[in-house]
Length: 467
Ligand SMILES: [Zn+2]
Image (cartoon, rainbow, N blue to C red):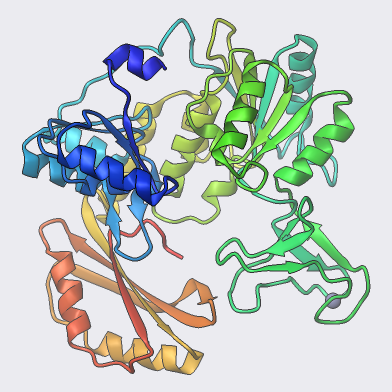
């Protein structure tokens, strides 16, 4: 393989999909110092290295480094800690670095190495905004005239197009046209997503699945339930009807469910056996498709709507990465970004190709309010089996707040996902100055309250999820 040719050894692989025997073998090889290079997921940080000299965190901005379940930690930050304990070198690599890392570089804590240009002869694609307020698609369609024309040109030139829509399934919402009921998961406060390929309604939070009912569960009307909005499956339907004869495939975690299936699809795309690839954020990862010259972002505003602290940063990083799929070989690429908010900084500066200006803008916004990386954030999430118990516990928790300076507390408030797996959730958001030990403050706060044993309190320092 390319890796072996370059480094003379095959890497030991460490990830949860590998079986226990394989993991035991890697663990022993690492402990004995025989595994010279380990390529691994987050938990590779916990292997018993004998003589660790270099850690590379690729795509360091990727928010999936934050482990949200069970033991909460941020693998990038833990990698920095481990490197400092081992006194070894660490490289945080990214084309779209996180603000936290940029701040450390600007403060002189990290040295900043810039790679000029992309590998090989390829150039960054040109990025154009399609203002959907001026040229909207017809009702029930999601591809506007500008993007449609570009797809036609691309197909005529025997080149490939990638359409990016970060929504799995057919429709993100199912609505009763008779009574207006929106179908929710029975035990969670989240909309059920219609999946046509599997014929199911799915809760993407908990994995709850049911067959789509024939009658509205609220008013009993027959055949009244309709999917609202597009997912990748619905986009594929539109592409099939509008671009006859084009070979279309969908890449999402629902359609490609194994590493082998993914490899197979990637190789068909590389060999030109696919004309239009429709994908969720899986397609953003660094694949090289030599004749992919057009990237269409169907709904650039999707990630901005949640409006959490990092919505703009995340949108900018993701869309720049997706746009970068176009024109990886000698053919120049272009990206067309469909948006209803062309003036929003993340979108406008993306179109201008000005990453540094975007980072400067975001830094200013965060500095103004003392949010990370200029301050610390913490979250307390209380959950109880009834709304009353959640409210009472949240009030008791609030009353027990220790006195401290340099700390602001907002809440309690119902969490955006108010009910999850039958549990009623309340949130506090805590901001502190950088010099405050926020972990210690939160732990001390939790110690002061005696709550019923079935009330759970979760502490999250530097939260990435605000749901
Ligand atoms: Zn109804």
